[in-house]
Length: 240
Image 1 (cartoon, rainbow, N blue to C red):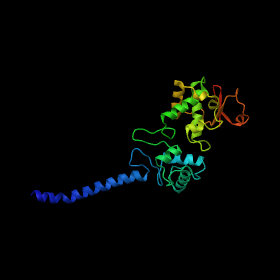
Image 2 (image 1 turned 90 degrees about the horizontal axis):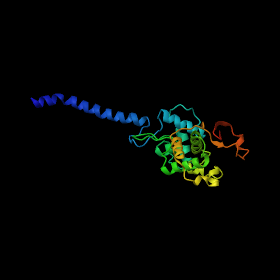
Image 3 (image 1 turned 90 degrees about the vertical axis):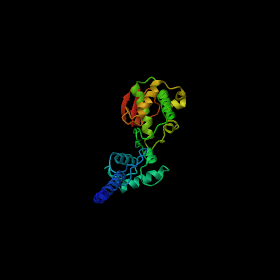
Image 4 (image 1 turned 120 degrees about the vertical axis):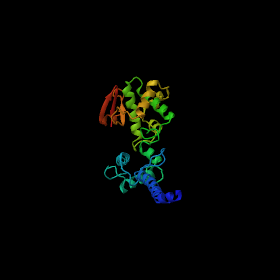
């Protein structure tokens, strides 16, 4: 009797197993096709992906002259070609896939199982301290929002292909900041400078996207006065 019952339900069991296996495969394919890695510690955006991450990639690559198409959030061949060109320029594996390394270089927040980073890369503690030193040297005595704005200008330059692609590279670029030239850079930064550095790294930009700033009472460069002024915070003029 038991054997007959088992034989009776065997076809249903087999069908159930088939649906389970194909359902699992379809689930994996769903996420793979949309650019999500099965590894929660990495993020992959590739041909066929759609969404906000793709728009961010397209926007940045368009700004830098790599991407000529429409910012539509669809990873097509134009986006892939632009990614490959960017990867070749920056010494990355030219596979047309925005994996973790390429995402960091582009400035795309890299997702992890716990959180998403800001300002495009994982900032090490020494980078935070270097940024705080620059704030302390350049904006000591300025209102707090002005200190954050100075940090934001440095980070805006990091994200711009016209400047070095690291915090230290931007700060120590010859002639870029007077605090480096006069030694103010090497003073121990105070708590306000550290907090301002962290706020800027977390994405706060009171400068409005400025690439430069100057103190009109001390500026000796005629060129800096030619830049469009977009914000005045404390004693600093912030400009494009």
